Structures are given as structure tokens and as C-alpha cells.
Image 1: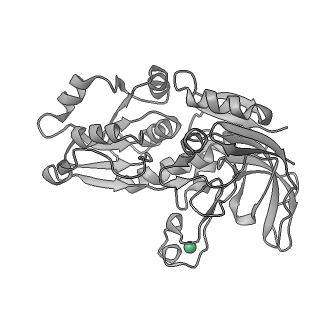
Image 2 (image 1 turned 180 degrees about the horizontal axis):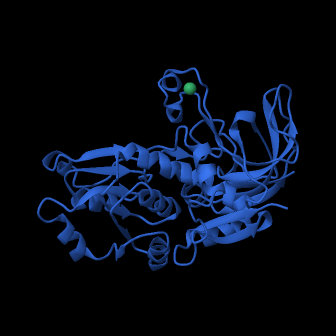
Length: 345
Ligand code: ZN
């Protein structure tokens, strides 16, 4: 099988590897589409994502959909040819966090396409993957593979909005309008937000934010506007930080009203971030984080399959596996792309 293997920063080579064989309880999936995520871009360009560094040849990708190719022993409910979205995470089910209902913090998590463990958990940008049968969520034949692969970032958005608490009637500021940011915006709308303002440095990103439901968009370089939001103990009931930049977090802390909530979804750089942290105390900010997702993956799949969330404005480009390096270049250019997919023959 062919696999897109990252050998050094900005150099993916298409390597021929032996296809993996499913053990009991596992299935082999023929991958048909995969989305490039911000963490993939970070691994590709910087050799690390947050605190996780690449230390060996590494197959990226954790947003994918495909068809069941063959099933291992003891697998029921999945048959060859069935169309599935694949949850990249497999929690152990027995550690103390799994038992607390927090599988995203599993101490033995195998999350595909993540360098959080060594050897790394290899990712999905290859023709065949072997996963636990429980990681596969069947989707309708009518749903495109690239659309189905969006279940993963949508699950991230669903988990974050759930963590933030009720948005009914809330004035919401979204900082960072990348693919996950725009999905957060769409979910916040469905969750009853009264007014959503979106901030980004990219005009293209702000245009997409408007198309998925932002009432107003503001360029993040507009310091005067941010100063106005900061005045009189802040403006927004809930600020969702989805830029992953210290400057974005600083804007969030300044713009939230006293007693409001800042939800950290963006992946900040490793180490320390210089922000106006004392505002957490002086404005009694509820500063919370959201990491990956827990049990939202199947719900996300259904939201997409039913058409309740329109993904079309987000899906801007698709490339073949052989064009993987080009795909990463385009995905990195926020002036022209939003979500970029790799498609597999
Ligand atoms: Zn566990």
C-alpha cells in the first residue's frame, strides 16, 4: 500500500508499505479521504505540535473516512464495502480517567497521527489502516468521504461547546476562524447563541465565518475595536479561543465580560504564553479548556449525514495522495484555503 510518510519537516515521501492485518476485534479500512488539520500542519512545518515532537518517520492524519476492506475475528455489524467514518482515538476503557467518563484523557490513549507517545501512533494518510471495530461509525452511501471525515473536527467543536455550558442567549466572540473555529461557530449557532462575532487576521477566514453564521466579523489587527470590547469590564458572555496563539488568548481575556467564560480550544505553543493572566482573577473569568472529544464522535457523524451542519463553505481543496506536499502548502496558506482534503483512489 502507499503511505504519505513525513521524513523531515516539509518533506513527505510516498512510501510503499505492507498493508496491516486486522486482529480479533479489528477491521481494515480502505481510506478514501482524509482532512489536513492544524496539528498536521504544525508537525509538517515545525516537526512538532504543541508539546509533541516528531522523532521518527511519521504518517500524519487523524480525520478520515473510507470503506471496510476486511474484518478480523469476533467483529459483528460491519461488512466489507461498508462506508464508515473512523474515530482516530481508541481509549483503554479501564484507566482512572476512562472510568471517570473522560476517555480523551485516557492514560493509554492510542490516537492515530499523534506524536504524543513513542513509538508514535501512526496516522491515516495511507491506503489502508487497521482500527478497532468500535472506532468505525457507519455513514450513508450518499455521504461523500471527505464530508464524513469532517466528523472528527466537528466532534472537537461539539465537545468544546458542551464544556462551555449554556450558550442560549449569549453574546459570543470567536477568536480564530480556521476550520475548527468555523465549526465552533456553526455549533454555537445551533446551541442558541444570540449574537456571534468572529475575529481573525485572514480576510478569507472571516468570509467563511460569515457564510457559516457570524453576525459580524472583525480583523484581529483592529486594536481599537479590541480596546472597546475590553472597556467597562469586558463585553462578551463567552469567548471561544480557537486561534491557538498567545495574542488570541490575550484578546479573549480582555474581551470577555466580568464573570464570563473563556473556552480554550486552540493549541497554544509549547511552554509559556505571555498574556494578561491577572484578568482571570480581577474579572472572575471562568477560564476553561477543551481537549479533543469524549463521546461526541458518533453525534458529529449524524449531524453531518443529516445535513444539519453545512460543511460546504469549509471544504475548499482536494488533492491526490501523490500531491501531499502541495496539499500541505495550500492548507498552510490561509489566504486561499480552509479545510484541505487528500483523496485516495
Ligand atoms: Zn483509559
